Length: 234
Image (tube, helix red, strand yellow):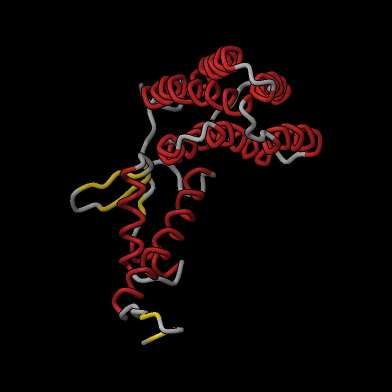
C-alpha cells in the first residue's frame, strides 16, 4: 500500500505473531524472574511449562523461550527427562558474583564520575539516595533492597557504556536474589556508603568513586557469605 506517496510494506501475519511471542516471552521472563528473586519459586523447584503457560495465559512457546533465557542468565537449570528447575545457588556462586561486581561496578563508578564532570546529569542518583532514606524510615524492607539495586544500576547507566548496561542486567537480578536470602549489614550503614559514593560521582571525582565502590562491594562480601554458610553448599 502507499502512504502519502511513500510505499509501505505491511508486516505479514507470521511477523506479527513472532513479535507477539517475543513480547509474551519477555513478560513471562520478568514474572518468573521476580518469582525466583522474591522466593516464590524456591531453589530446586520445578518450573513446568504447562503450568506456567496456563498461569500466564500464553502458549508454551514464549514460556519455553523465557525458561531458556533464564537458564542462560543463571537462574534456571534444565535436566534430561526432568525439565527445568530453579538453580540451587552455592557459596562459590556468591563469591563469583562479588568478584565480577568488583570488576564491573568499580569501572562504572569511575566512568560515571568522569561523565558527570563533563556535564552529564546525576540527578537520578541523588533521587535514589533520598528515596532510600525515606524507605529506611518507613519501610518495607523489600523497598529498601529494591532501591539499593536500582542505585547500583543507575551508576552503571551513568557510565554511558551500552554494552556494560546490557551485560549487568542478569547480574543485578542475581544480586537481588542473593541479598534476599542473606543480607547481614545494616541498612543505615549501606545508606551512608551510598551517600559517600553518590557524592564522589556527583562531584566528578573518578578515583574516589572507584575506591568507594570497591570498598562498598568488598565490605558486603563477608556478611553475605556468613549469612549463607549454613544454607548453601560450597
